[in-house]
Image (cartoon, rainbow, N blue to C red; front, side):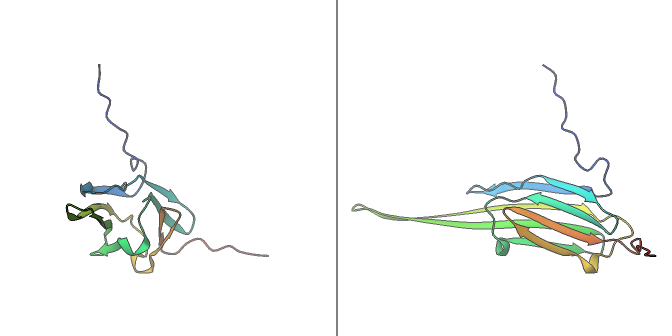
Length: 133
């Protein structure tokens, strides 16, 4: 049986995955896959983060060159019975870092989340201007 390495989803992308760390701790949510798309005006990174709420996500730019996406969820369950009372607390985390493509405007980054999909938009410097007659 031969082992075939997984293809790098950023192979043909200006985004370079610097580091990724998956789940740690307890609980269940996926760190998901991230997909890069380039438009005439921006670079768009979309990632699946099912089950996470907006307030559990962080999108940060470090030194103007690194995009860091992370998520953390704390889950508590409480059980009461005649014999005992128990409280279970679990923490799940993930973090992904990407090199920001050249000729972008990181200060104008926009991020939104809808139906478990995080969308990060990095506008390009000097996007093409449509000329109308």
